[in-house]
Length: 323
Image (cartoon, rainbow, N blue to C red; front, side, top):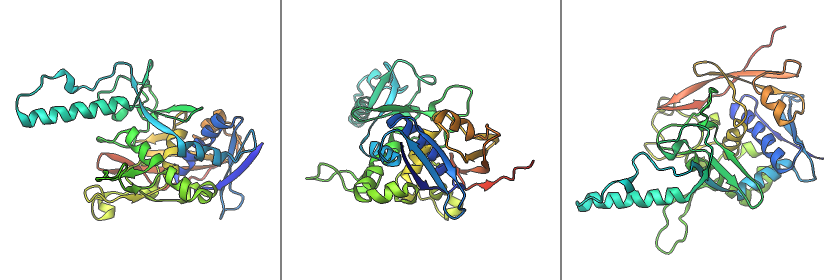
């Protein structure tokens, strides 16, 4: 068995969700994964993870993410509601140029999709609600809690024209400026897990949630990157300013919420729990919502703030358990 631990802030909901994501990912990649929190030292709370084999499980997960390829997952024969190929070619030069641009954009979008026979919700009108597939040469997983069409809370926080594919690509591979003449790839604008793995591998493995580069987009799970225009005094989006947060926390929180959701017990008021024993993923999913009463446990609550139409996670406060 391989065993390791990382520091975690239990008052940061995104980090706790991401710990479950580490557990789920390590179970897929290494096998026989068990994980839990150790708060015996209040100044150094850790998430402990053990798996089959000899490789550090956190390293195995981060290595996989740093080299993974991403695609959107679409229903077979999917086309957008405003499919430009169904429209006649405009006669006006200006309209024709826009029509041709829309066709090229759709062709590129379709090339980035993996087709699936089954889909978790009704066929989306746009690609923004599609799940994603991340894969390397031997392993792959489909993530898409934001597209959950069941009665469960999908816990989708982002809105607008952003897509999970765009957000995930930024988290894993970074973002780049448009390439200039003589460049194959544009200048790196914001770093993702791939760049952190290349430049700060040891730090990334030892304390993955502590590396908080500027980010071009997020799922809104890490409260360190949360803002409202009132709090900030202006809109970073309007000024095209990036905010800083952990791409590891952001992406692995999405993985953690694939099979478990925190308890939104009132509108925008949410509970979750950290468990004090090593558990396999199936039990840890239940423990996240405080569903196993016999476990040593810490319970927390937080509110979802609003930034425009986006919901953003805020820092939590601990609940007192009576009895």
